[in-house]
Image (cartoon, rainbow, N blue to C red; front, side, top):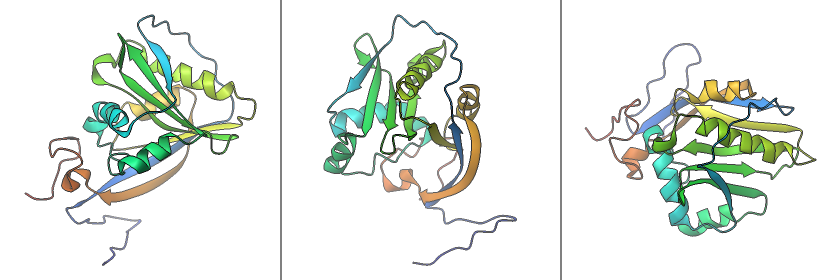
Length: 204
């Protein structure tokens, strides 16, 4: 496999079957003051055992416009084993009995908790649902005695509002990286019209 050197000053031209993201890592080291948000129409339910199909359904509804693909390339047994890890907690915000978002927390290092996935389905974006869900996450994480740090990463493939939302929630950027991956649309795990903010190039 040939490699392409990354130019840290200037441009690096990628093969058309690859896609690149600028990734920003953020952290907080103490619980922020929370602005109360009342959403009587939403309830948070922890998932003790979630099938790969059920997880992917929610994952796609949230992430397809933003090229979320990390969990779409896993085999069913691999994904279900990941979700069943005792240090991983998966929560679904529910509205009228249906999941309308995803909150996934990784407590593998109980002092440094990772927010691995956070998002809402399009029909509930706005009106305070995101703030409500983040408040739930902050209460869960900072309610654990061993928590010293809560961190996450977001990227340029995600919603353009994501980075500002995380900063307003109390997270502070501390590191940046470049991620290069196979374009999930070229792999067939996402439709070719997904993520129009990053146009699909392969196979034209």
